Length: 289
Ligand SMILES: C[S@@+](CC[C@H](N)C(=O)[O-])C[C@H]1O[C@@H](n2cnc3c(N)ncnc32)[C@H](O)[C@@H]1O
Image (cartoon, rainbow, N blue to C red; front, side, top):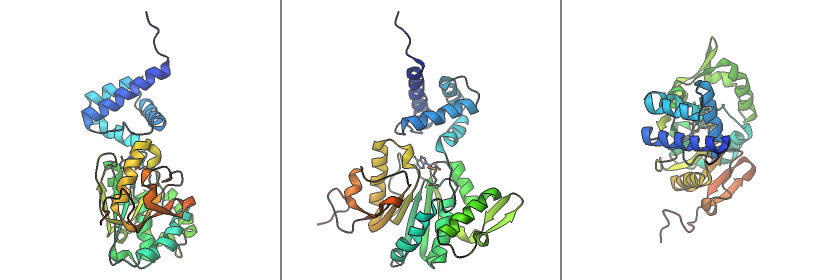
């Protein structure tokens, strides 16, 4: 009789079956997500839903159609902040917006928008620099619940203090409070900030280029992806950007090892701010004679 595999191996097998069930039964493909962080989140789901194992979670996923909503919610980590990493938003304000100002119409794609905090931060930057009227922000995520919350623009008041500090560090000259009304334990961002934002469902694993963009901001999403999926996503961003357009990634993410790196120059490598080359390079989609 052969000896059973150690628990970790068994758990890896259970994770494979869970991912397969999620894909075949519900059409959500997590097979190219970074394995260790996916395992952590699946274990958390097992705990939160009082399941005895990943297999028990899989059984629930297969037999209870609505359960998938909670599973996707648990795997998506829609955690964000307004003006998160203020130095990045300061660099966008001081180095990128003056360049965007030369376009008659400015398109920004913010991928992995979570509850919308970064999209609203961009709207504030654009408004303060006098560019919002001719800008459009396409803020996308694959988590429908997160998108709904993003559209509402309502957040816990306890977060406002930190976000106000971020705003000032990012070069804000007013008070963040001038952009929201506070009620009980919540703040509600002013309706006018939403006027040029479209929140839309887009899945970076399967969907195509979303729009022609002058700036793509996708922060703290690639860290959850395996290398091939990171490469797919970065190619999508390259193809979405106009020549000379900017790309902004999360501080723990990089373009350096991706094949599309040849199509970009680093504007501020520490802040993960890049610019698509204005000259065609080999492999570019729209290389013309
Ligand atoms: C940690 S949040 C980052 C939020 C924000 N960009 C920030 O840096 O504060 C990651 C977001 O990526 C989204 N996400 C994960 N996989 C995705 C995919 N395949 N397509 C689109 N969005 C995805 C999640 O739903 C989540 O809202």
